[in-house]
Length: 260
Image (cartoon, rainbow, N blue to C red):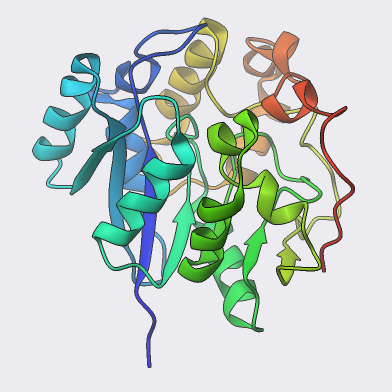
């Protein structure tokens, strides 16, 4: 029996460094629309749901979801754990895939690889973040609804609620945890940044889309790497932030992780 897979995309306008980043334009569409387009390219069957907040600022996210014909859920402004859980529950998910809206260059092939690994065994949770090897901005987390529910019931630290998954991957004795690494054997997680959090990230992403999208809509992570080798000045656009991510801010709080 095929399990119901729901991709939950947390998205909101508020951002301490770049307000409204998910609605910035690229080739005539919003970054959110471009990301949804890429999510629709995966080989696995899945429903995509945008999880936004009840803030009036996020009315524009709702309008964008409606224009894209993508279902949405509106929930807590600060508790992303609850927002993700309620969205997954509303759409009867059995398997939940979390892809942050600040990953507009996400490679659909990486999502498929994570799903294939997840379904290869009786995993509760699979990601490509423990340890991370892909360029930052290719974040994929796959979990059973039962796993997400247990985390929702038991997690309580502020960054658990903000980032959803630390409670899960810090408890390998409770959850069966798996990890997917980049098949190249390389680790570009701290040297290449494909996500968006700063204006320079936007300029980088916009340039990548302009270079690659007209050639192939379904361009890959490797295509981006090849572009940056050919045109290193594009790499330099946001290189100053390559080592910056939320995980580093909480190193003193995070527990050791065991994943297979």
